[in-house]
Figure 1 (tube, rainbow, N blue to C red):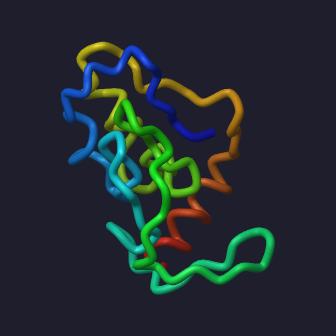
Figure 2 (figure 1 turned 120 degrees about the vertical axis):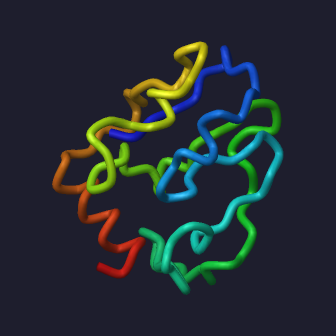
Length: 115
């Protein structure tokens, strides 16, 4: 599963630099697939090809957010999700709407980092 940031977020930003996939962004900030990864382009589930540097709409305008499709729960990097480890208000939690196996998370990591 991926990690999500709840609306209890105090916008401290402690989580953002900890993410090895650059999946965490400040509220209102556009994100890219290529940021923090080796992706030059991505083919989405519907077959659409997206340039890795193409700006994507923010997931949240108010709070820090995690791009689910870039989150690997730090599998292959750390023993536990680093965002949750450093969050002072415990608002980085498992996202019940996005459950993935460890194998799927490791495959996502490999895809994003060209392994």
